[in-house]
Image 1 (cartoon, helix red, strand yellow):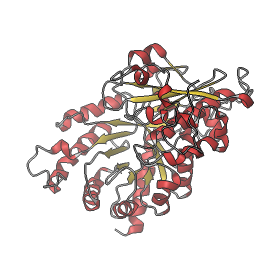
Image 2: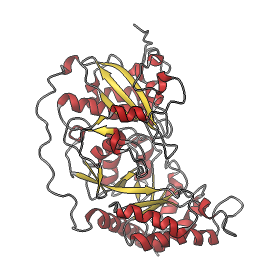
Image 3: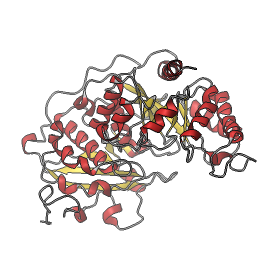
Length: 460
């Protein structure tokens, strides 16, 4: 197969996957026309924007109970009572944002319009785990500004292209070695209304099969045959619906090519993060991409358009990118990344395994992207029974028929349900870090940066 034909095949696979999920019966992207009622009228009368100043940044941590991925939330307070909610990358600690508090206190939060605040902190971001703090702050600033101006966060980013965003439902293996039992687990996703699926496909699934691994713990040809039994069983359950997979283990470029070629008969929507999740080795990804018709994707741990994604995109090293709003730089930065990808003719999906704040922030960004280049937004919390209950202000269930509705109310359009959040706080240490938005005086004095950039603030 020539490289041109292979590229066309991958592109057709991704377009087919997107069409099957997003259009499906009855072959339409939304239930109706995009809403023109954006509540974009008057400025919030409870605020005086010219005198608005940030007074504090506080945080809390929600324990979802079923995984290691906590939901670290932050709140940026102001002198006029209006505040913004944000979320740090899942599994991190909210204090990654807290350490940046001295950059914020005393400043006008509406400076996000000309990126003044974010520019002063950008060099403290970076690939995972360094991007979560600055990304969470960006989300909180957009929530805050939307509330002040009385407009939804998507309006601050651009035009709304759709009222609801297609989700892909991630499903971990849960240690299930039996292919039929795992396929039955996938069936629960289908019955719940999801149209786009992803599964973990790590070599650990077949570690006890004879001859499955080589001395490095990578699947042999026989091991790949065993892994493909899972894909076959899942296909029997979900049919031709889009199916992606990830968590392959420690592969090198040659390993990844073997895996990707073995998966070709199953028409995957994509295979994810074969050699790393930052895309740092874009040359390695390019070699993999050019060697298979299985679409290749990466980027959930990458930060910044110029810092990381531009090389992947300019060199057409992957078929699709996978930024995370709460890790890759925040709402504006991820929109920049996705818009640049669209110009390059490369599709975008959003990584998002976190809580409702992260989910709504991601949906607001996704709603402003061209439907022809946006694939789907991740949902990874189908096993968290109280996920919907963590927030108020929107119709429930939040996830409905495989889609996430995008609010037209100010900011992110949601508020925390305080009693439910308090019920699920993680408290492994002292209350000042792990309570419900308790004072964060430990961050009042600058811990990073230069004196000129970030003069230390003594407690009042």
